Length: 78
Image (cartoon, rainbow, N blue to C red; front, side, top):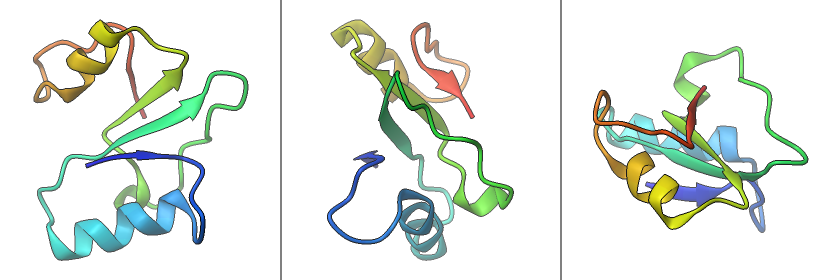
């Protein structure tokens, strides 16, 4: 799942936790502005697999979509 940190309602951490409750193996990529990167939540269930900071290059986005260990040059795990 790819989502932005800014949602119309609710929080990204709540979305991650609720989505993982439905699909425990779900891989989550959170897109956030480089000027305001999110702090890692204390609860591991609320942590995305990758935080991709905007602006990013299309290659960084493609690498973030790869499974763990498949690269991720511009994305940072959280």
